[in-house]
Image 1 (tube, rainbow, N blue to C red):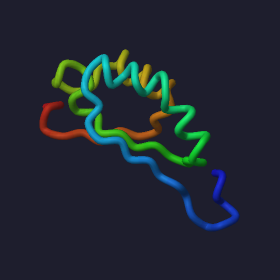
Image 2 (cartoon, one colour):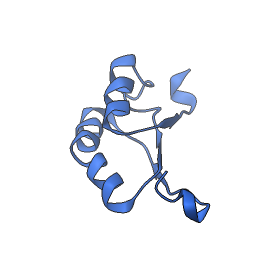
Image 3 (cartoon, rainbow, N blue to C red):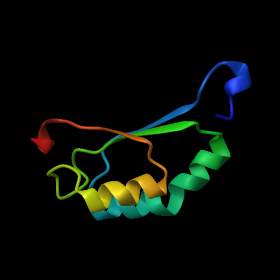
Image 4 (tube, rainbow, N blue to C red):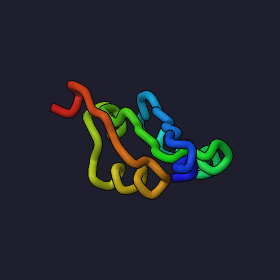
Length: 78
């Protein structure tokens, strides 16, 4: 963690990622945002990623590769 010596971590929380446009946007931009802002951990709302019906394994893997560390979910995954 980049801020360990200061005893804090920098979180980035991303709201609803909606479908392919959201995935592609994060694939293109998230690593740069993380580097530019010294982000330690990325949390994303993932319930609408795959056709507003949750998060498929493929989309999960794409977003993990893009830099998302943790996903929150809501009622659309059930």
